[in-house]
Length: 243
Ligand SMILES: [Zn+2]
Image (cartoon, rainbow, N blue to C red; front, top):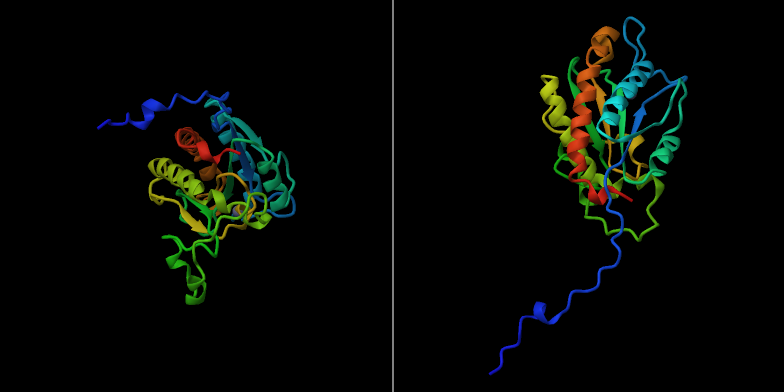
């Protein structure tokens, strides 16, 4: 009886099409939240979240550039682009991620918390404490993959949810090392500014506005270093995040 050769020896190697350029993380979109008439949180001494996050974005941007990333900042001055405008800036980039910067108004001073967008219809391990009703949970079936090109703008973040969590967790691990008392992993919340962003996207909430400008500014270097390290680490697992 003749034993057929294993199939792999019968099949000549398919000629390789020229490789598509590999997706690699190149661009970090930094979003200093608020701006213009929207001051964000205000500290007792008058410090405004909108001004502090703009400063942080410059310092974090410098650290990212040193790691070889291109940096796009969604606002340069004291303006307040809409969530959609900011998402549009992010979505125009290829091979990018989106990091929104906030100063906290309720969180513990001196810590940093990272959030990814929680879609109401997707029940994950992070959704159980959200006070969702049984009705919502009952509808939380795994959604079918939408046809390409038909994803509603408001759900643009959905295909990136897992990648965003990966990015958020890497950020949180780095930042927890620098800022004691910070959580060990990221959390998911309905952070609406992230939902229309079609790249991995996270919001980073820094300390508490009540800590005052001086204490907050003292965190900038550590924050920038932590974010740059986490983004460099995330680059090694990025591929599918690219467009
Ligand atoms: Zn804010």
